[in-house]
Each structure stands twice: as C-alpha cells, then as structure tokens.
Length: 60
Image (tube, helix red, strand yellow):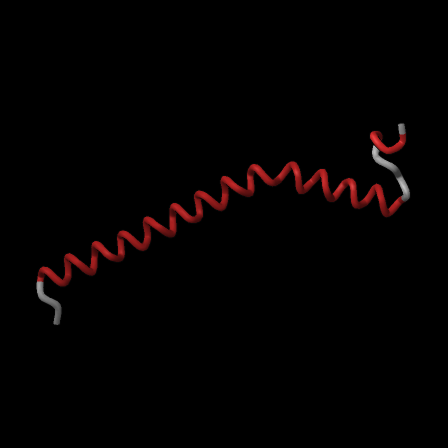
C-alpha cells in the first residue's frame, strides 16, 4: 500500500505524463496542418508527372 505522499507523487507523475502526451498530440496536429498543403501539391505534381504534364515553370 502506498503512503499518502507516494499517492500524491504517483498522481503528479501521471498528470505530467498525460500533459506531455497532450502537448505531443497538439504539436503533431500543428505540424500536420502546416504540411497538408505542401503534401497535396507534391501529390498533384507526382500525378501530373505520371500523365506527362510539365509544371508551368518547365513548360515556359
């Protein structure tokens, strides 16, 4: 059985871990929101290249 102090320490550690996990998730969502457009552009360029369509800059 845990002492009251150990119980508080365990609860504090659990809260710290949960907080870190939430922060990690928030950061991942933020990164993905910034990458969404570049990823879509790259996928579109890859599909265009597969069809033989040149980017506007190259076609000039």
